Amino acid sequence: MRFYLQKAAAVGFLVFLVLWVAGTLRGITLDYPLPTPITISEFRSSQQQFQGANNLKQLGLGWTALPLVLDHPKVELIRIHDKRAILAIGTSEFTKDEAAIRDAIKEQNKQEQKAEIFTEHRSGIEPNRKLAIEIGVHPDNFDALVDKLQTIGTLSSITVEQKDRTGEFRTLFAKRQSLKKHLEAIVKLREGKSPTLEDSLRLEGKIQEIEKEMQGLSVQFGDLIGAETYYHIHVTLAEHVPGGKGDKTYTMPQRVGHAFLWATAWWFAVALACCVAAGACMSVWVLMQRQAR
Image 1 (cartoon, rainbow, N blue to C red):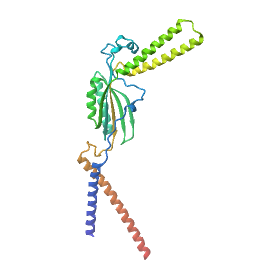
Image 2: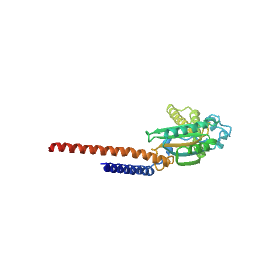
Image 3: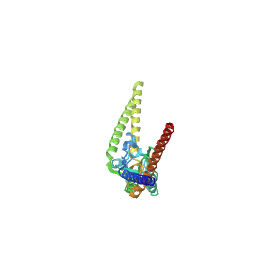
Image 4: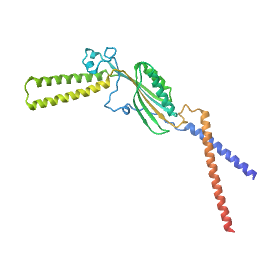
C-alpha cells in the first residue's frame, strides 16, 4: 500500500511540474496584441477643421475679432501650420496609466501656456478598455509633453507630422473676397433703380444665400485660426491582459510565480476530477458486488 502511495505522489508531483513548465511557456508565448493608433477621422467628423498654430500675436492681431482680422491690411502676412503627434500605448495597468496621462496634462497647466483635452473617446470593458484623447498644447510645450507621454505604459508606435496650412487659409480668404464682391454688386444693383417686386424678392433671396455662405466660411475661419494657438497630440491607450510575450513590464520571476499559481489551480482541478472519477468507479463496483450476492 505504501508503495502505491509513493507512486501516486511521484505521479502527482510530475504532473504539477509539467503544468508549471507549461504555464511558464504559455506566458512567454501568449499573444500580446499591440494597440493601433486611432485615426484622425475617429476623433472628429470630416467637416471639422483642426485649429492650428498661427502668427496672429506676432502681427499684433492676437486678440482682434475675426471679422476685423480678415479685413486688416496684414491679413496677407498670416501664416498657419499644424504639428501633431499620434501615439499608441499598450498597458496592463489601465487605470494607473490613464491617471498618468491626465497628470502629464495637468503638469502643463501649471505653466503659462495650458494644455487642453479637446476630444475624448472611451470604449470597452475590463480587461479590454480603450481610451483615445486629443490634446491641444502650446507649441513651446509640445516636445516636452510628447516625451513625457512616451514613458507611460508600453509605446507601440509614434508618428510626428507637421503641415503648412496657410494654403487652406488663402483658399478660404479668396472665396470670402469673391462672395463679398458678389454681394456688393447685388446690393448696388438692387439700389440702382426701382426694381419690380419680383426682382426685389429674387435679389433679396440671392443676398440671403450669399450671407449664409459667408457665415459658413466664418465658421471655417474660426476652426482654422483663433486667439489661442495649438499643436495636437492624439493618444490611444489600449488595455491588455498582463503577461503576454510583448509585455515588457512583466518580469521573469513574475511569470514563473504566475505560472506556479496557474499550475496549482489546474493541479487541484485535475486531482479533484480524478478523485471524483475514482469515487464514482468505486461506488459502481460496490453496488455491482452487492447485486451479485
